[in-house]
Structure formats: C-alpha cells, structure tokens
View 1: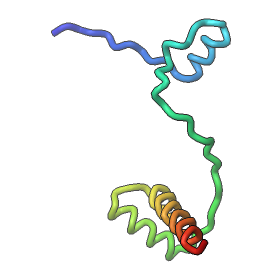
View 2 (view 1 turned 180 degrees about the vertical axis):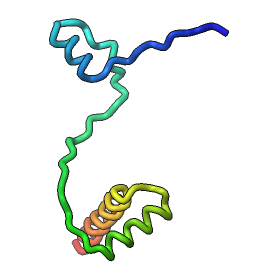
View 3 (view 1 turned 135 degrees about the vertical axis):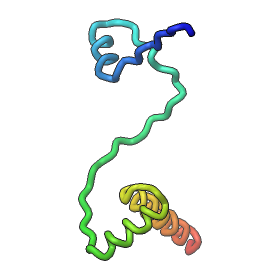
Length: 88
C-alpha cells in the first residue's frame, strides 16, 4: 500500500500570520461557506426541577442540554413571530 501524506490544513492563526507577512492566502478559501453572526455568551438561571426536565429531554434525544435549550428557544421565538403575524 502506498503511504500517501495528507496535506496539512493550517489553522486560522497560521493563515492570519501568512496574511500579515503579505503572502497570498486565497488558496485557503473556497467561498462555499457562509458568514455567521458572532455568538454572545449569556447566563441564565434555571430551577433545579427545570434543569432535570431539560436533562431528561437531552438524554432522550441524545443531545446536550445546551442544544435542547437553543432548540426550544428557537421554536418559542418562531411561534411568537407567527402569532404576531397572524394577529396583523
């Protein structure tokens, strides 16, 4: 079997260093991605009972507690906007 070396993909910091040196870094970009807004971390207080409920749901779905919270919050926001739209 041939021993084929894989190309090392540089990390973002390494690409930034190349750019700072004035090197062409266009080969590292495919223009297939999408820009996403920055994430801002927030703290939310939950009761123990609510955390237990969230953990139960997360376990049954095999996802993290954070994923459950984000999913349910997104659904609630969508429902809010739909109800506002229907009321107009």
